[in-house]
Length: 511
Image (cartoon, rainbow, N blue to C red; front, side, top):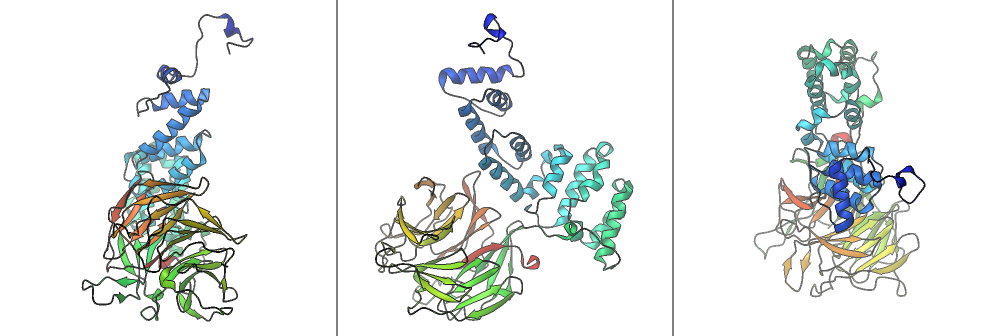
């Protein structure tokens, strides 16, 4: 402005429009001191000024501030701000959206939900990923929003209620609403819609409603399969478990899933992987479980002239249509369900460099990572990390972890991999430490520790959050709150399990 031909070059005073003095003062102070102090009272002024002047470091500080302040009481306002400004990164946008989806039932109890615009409320209601235990909760939340200013908002009743999955409501609930909510139901189109849904739910073939109104949301639950039960008498063998149970993470309620019980689980140790609409129980035998028919089927694989690896010492993952089993004495194999055949994927010239007994194994962006483990005598813990590029078949060494560990879980989440817990042979103890690997930079860093040390446990990502389950002599369950960078304990297992397998998908009644 001052180095050009603009008229401001000839003036001794310039009026800065569309900026607040507090924002200008903070930015100018940053130019001189390289520091900026953000709080709830000055954030809007500083962000507006930094955004107008494109002060990159201050914008980054604003983004970090929003991450730290994110909570159920303010996340909707943050979501509206982030979605309205292209200045914010896609990473923050996904983080906020994921937080809102996962905590929506808590959010609906806050006062902020009553202040959001109709357009944003509808934007939330239509999301398949919204985590709610039952659709009636959303219906009541819409009623609460409408009644907050019914004279102004009453005209939006049909539009918003049509965004609720009305076909998933209980018949008696709708009939109660028709009797109870006379003011809202003065809207004749909404009254007509609800009466049509009731007739549909009663099986009236002449009534047709939109497929959207009966489509189930994609909220996941945590399934726990098999494993062993810790025995208080160490000289007695651990007891194999063949049952499957699942945790509704919203209600913190455990239920059995008898259809998934595997008949041979007490005779053969299995590890479970999920892929392409099936669950696979992999051990000396292999079974597949069709998620549509809820039936186990035994497979009869071909081995191409070699013996499959001992599943007890290996890690398992699914990638590009194949099951990868890696671990033991420099062993790596894959099973292709389409031709029911085992294949070796390592060789003397281009294979695993080290032994990895009981490593953490996971797939991330078509690359398989083998993390930690120990030697065959369980005396030498490993901090080493190797990766296998599925497309090229090449093994690569990656940066080592900060701490050697075996019996850990390797869990991919977004663009990072978490190495959680395990056992340290030097200290001879289970670990509560957690390390995070960023593949793009080949670096490790420590993050918040578990609330309890655990080894030989199960894990899964449920609704975008890491859950860890059980472990040797551990019954608790906890999840990682990525926003707050802390682990939170939830309702524990009904029975202790170690060496169990976990996966996430919709509840059984939604499969």
